[in-house]
Length: 432
Ligand code: NMX
Ligand code: MLT
Image 1 (cartoon, helix red, strand yellow):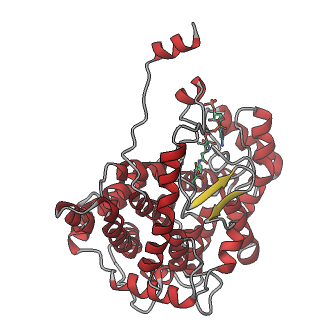
Image 2 (cartoon, rainbow, N blue to C red):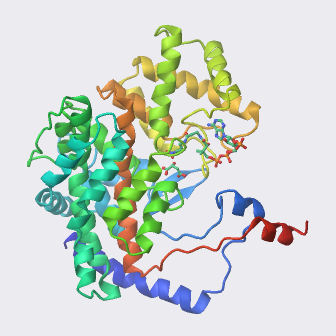
């Protein structure tokens, strides 16, 4: 069964569940909203629906019901490699089914056929100032491809609502096939004197990305792990929500993906992974490259807090334990780069930051998130231009965001439009 056929069966089975909930139980309450939630970023308000992943505060993310170690263990592996095919993870996110080796092989071939970023995108990026942030280049490159949208074409021809998911899937597959090339092009344009490396038709998505970046094995496995770990984090995080929100207006996935990248570019969200490396570099400079003692590191952490900044890579809006994505990358470091000097810094931070954040008493979660550990691996394998790191996050995050948009269309989710109130109204509700 092709990916599209498997997905069609799933969608047909799923639709009656959503319809029934809406028709028979539409008035059942799932959440109340307090004043602190209305002012405070809707934290904890349960008002989004997705079946692609779920984030338990104490356990962390499950992709289609599977923990990270389960996901990595059950997906078909690239022959001779430690990590699974990213394409297999796409299949899992979209269908909820663990793909067979044949399913994965079909999708790998399908995505290969869809490769090829249009030349006008490269021309546009070359015309932009070289000091433009890579996330700006990435978002602009995605947006420039919007004219390729199959969804817009079908919509303009009068596409029926039940069929909206089909050209959306088409757009998503095209974009997934092209984002690694776009990302690698930006990397080599900005940091390697505009020396792009052409895609290799024999390689899978993760392998081809490493090849186009010009970084040797095992960076291919690093890329596969990175894209899978960053793929989805349920729907309320800024990037996923931005993508969903924009797509809810029936904007195509090019618009939605560009918007989700823009949200990811904030330092409280995806950009934190570059901030972690920037922060550690600052500490290294002050220490002359010597790994600080725990006491010395505590001083740096307090200095950061006392100057009014957050400690990047720590805390989370939902999680209340160490992020399992952090733990998975830590295991990778312990296995492959235990003596890396930056890993040693990260390790000292793991020991000293949580008790300090607890002592300070502000952060609800003192534990590390995914961003505290991801940069060190990139740095170790030669990708030391840390303002590029969030582009990697963006390629990974597209897997989940676009899978969600395909399902949003399949289930006919409406345009998103929460209601706002004025401060005076809140005061009236509060009785002040
Ligand atoms: N360092 C210092 N203060 C912190 C931290 C931190 N790492 N985390 C939270 N706080 C503060 C926060 O700024 C807030 O202070 P104030 O009351 O003065 O505004 C207070 O603790 C309460 O915040 P929380 O409710 O714990 O966190 P919230 O849900 O608002 O924000 C983050 C979540 C992730 C934005 C926040 O923990 C943070 O800024 N962390 C550092 C940046 C980071 O690592 N972001 C990456 C998140 C993962 N990702 O990839 O997206
Ligand atoms: C994410 O992966 O999106 C981040 O951990 C932020 C979040 O879930 O809020």
